[in-house]
Image 1: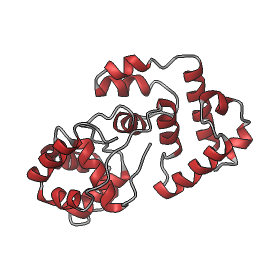
Image 2 (image 1 turned 90 degrees about the vertical axis):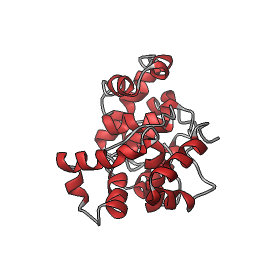
Image 3 (image 1 turned 120 degrees about the vertical axis):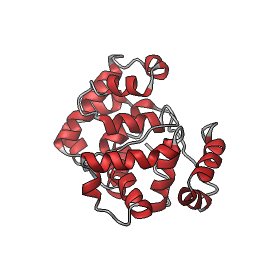
Image 4 (image 1 turned 120 degrees about the horizontal axis):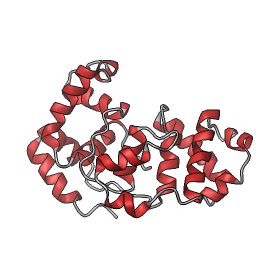
Length: 212
């Protein structure tokens, strides 16, 4: 099910930003969907780090075939070589195994995450090896369904902003501090629905909804 705020956010964004309004109008029947499984959300975010959505989908499909019940215990039962054969780098295998151990040992307090602010969630999750700010932001968007997250490290978001608002400015420039300030200022008009704006800007590049 879509988040309860979705229609309200769509209307507000369309009224505040005509460019975004046209993008939203092009996707009337799709919406953000949560997997509902915190481990799967974080695991898929680790898989997707620094590779394209298409490549991440392929690796994830092989991992899901290797571990049909993708639980922390199932991951811990697999050899590192078996996980690498799914297309994961050695470093990502280490991150995935460490994440599984955190869940198995109850080191991740889900009620605490649900009650925490966005920045507190990021602070808590980035204490885990292999989870940086981008991964924590994907958790905020796709698992906790927080409405106002702006992932300035996300290449897809920056490409879409460049395409629709900045006349094709090089994405690498937007990753630098002046570019980030520019994108954050532009996104001020989308608050308090920046997660929703980001999701539709992703759609403008890839019509297939991404899910973590």
